[in-house]
Image (cartoon, rainbow, N blue to C red; front, side, top):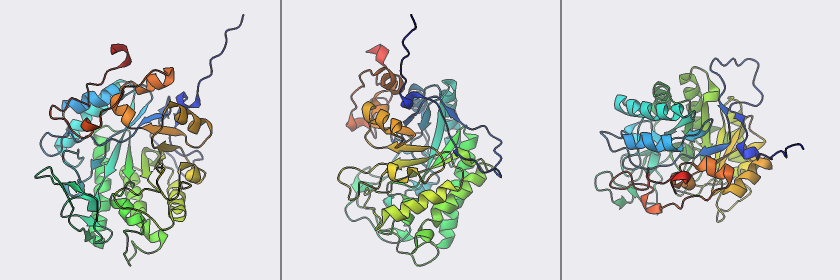
Length: 379
């Protein structure tokens, strides 16, 4: 009697990162990254880089190692490309030798378990509580951020509209951070262009009121994104499949918004598609957003490569999204915090650990809510 074949959901099947249709003129020297499943750890700010100046501790090594899986993609917490790009206390950087050495221990631990890890590159722009730059001098009206001195929530000072020279410096900082990420052992980098941070502040016309080549038309507002991508690809020696981008087309967080997100982000995705990137990563709109049609599914057909979708998924909705072709990979956040063996539990349909919001962004001992969540076999 023939054995009954078990159906494997597409969420747990392999995928190759990089362009679906590769330009014949592009000749990659590095191998394309082969994933064994499509469950991704989302970038998660944890505020535990307490050594020296924004340097990770051994606890971070344990944290990422716990969550690594064979052929699984982890995206690191957002990591500032420069001190001025930092928006919150104790977030890690990638601009000093000490930071690079600390990240080396993380990437080695992930690779020892057969995992893949991307470094998310970050500049917060006007979210910094003081001495910040943005596309314009429009400040935050209701959003508070954190003072590094007092650790109290404060209303951030109005940003300075970046000069052309400062914009060029930012672009160079992303390139240098990419080189540092390579030195630290990362497999790829993800450019953070979402959630109201600096690049997003240039994309959305609610904030970008410039009249030079970085403002006005959609093409101009996408110029910083374009030039950062080009700089990061150059820094990765032309290996564009090792560079990715995160976007939030319908994001309202940090008082953001665009008057025509379908057009603006449609053009953004078409632009990114020309670069043979590893993937594009979308933050899904929440139910209270104004235009729910502005989602991953809307833009997926415009991109020549894998698409990651993030936004409140559970096992059932993740399986459905991949099966229906709405996304190629699904990023999990909160449940990756609470469930270190999330990939196994999703695959075997095992109960997930509950998460504790109070320890998402810090705990005095650095361990509670970080590396003390149990694996299934320990319950």
